[in-house]
Image (cartoon, rainbow over all chains, first blue to last red; front, side):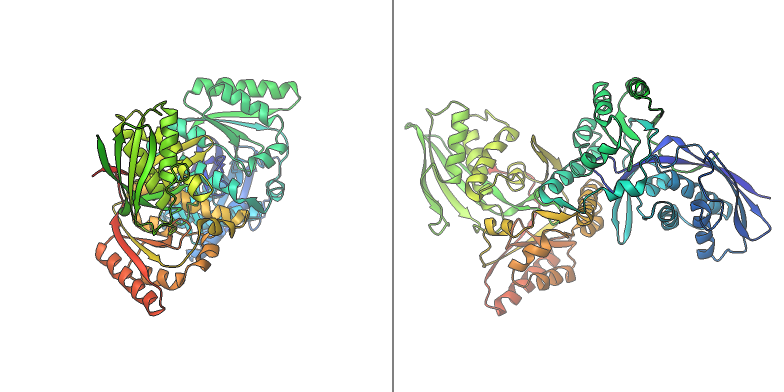
Length: 308
Length: 308
């Protein structure tokens, strides 16, 4: 029986000013998945570790298996049997693209086992389907960086067009505070209308951020990491957001913001030492308030999913 | 007596998806200005050609002289005497940045005559003052490209930050239909609130357009030249907008849109022949409706104002 073990990375979506269009992948955390070809047609979830029993084992309801089932159907390979063991090595509902990482791991593994019939770009819609199943919406800003690695721009959804941007040589500090901010709730508190003058500020920052990636002007990148539309609302759901931001910026962060819909916060640094110092300060501060947290420090992931 | 003759270019602001933040300069049309140092302190407008008597000769009310007066004040050089002859070689109130071109010509000429005490970046706020006097608002999306040349991004207004973007090797076709769309009116019909989902589409396109300039992917540039916020409203004020767009796109334009607040329309082409053909078709079509028009064909101006 042929089997494969893969890793797919966690991702930071939105990236402060790039609501619903920007995202990047990190080397840590991420999900591991073992997929085995079997002689009995059908996709099965054999085991899930690290999900605290929260994820469904029913193949039609689980993000990973549902995406893989769609893929096999499209490829007219429903004769194939696949057994999946998922190791969640990252928190769920944390704003780190947990469901995207799992879906991407499953699709990448299946595509590898089948001899790579599809390109990554062709796999993207299937990963988005999985995301829709998990989160109630099919946004690509987590799945695209999880699949392609690096910094990705979702130029448009209709038609779906993803652009790989230059990858900055920076360190990403992630802190996941153990508080509950469901993605659905975080979306619902956003207003459906925004002031045009705020939109103009936002798209000036997005345009500047894209420019900064091409010119490697990381000071400019920092100046563009401002969000006048989403952050003022969503940051209310994150404990001590402003204090953590001050700590990150005080330690030399180029910018600080909410990862996806939170509650994880991220910051970008030139120096891993400064990033680590900032993470320790934030973690300690939250601990004094009785809030546990996970911290991660990583370069930007350039590869997306890999066989391991 | 020392004197200087300068040219400053017309500009296309907004560039479809980049409302208030993007602009580029063209080689044609533009304004010419002759400035002469005199022994009598003060700034005087000696003559204005080509304005049909519309522009004020009062130095405190004229965009050009008012900007130059501010500059001399800042430099503590109110001992200097300057006589100005302005040749408007472009239509006013056309959406081509007429007042910006004049203000930039005046400031550039004065700065040259005084031995270049200020950089172009330092001249920018004075040009914006002139623009505010002419249009009632101090937006930089015409003055920045007129001053720096090329494609410019206004990353932010507070603080003012301008980024020079890579200049695409494309041809710009401009058509100014002789109908009246005052800038103030064109701004007033825009709604102060926009749908967040439309803003997301818009900033995806802006981000993609910035990327396309760095990668010289002009097909992508064309796909990003879409405006779901401003154009649907402002295009109502421009006669036969949709038909002109069809003609431009049918002749191979990468994209088509309103220049500034109109009524001039612009399109970008790879081929000057296709651009010329499209301009002739549009001009002829408007003529059958009794609408006169001016047409211009130019590469993107890379220099901004020059001594001539």
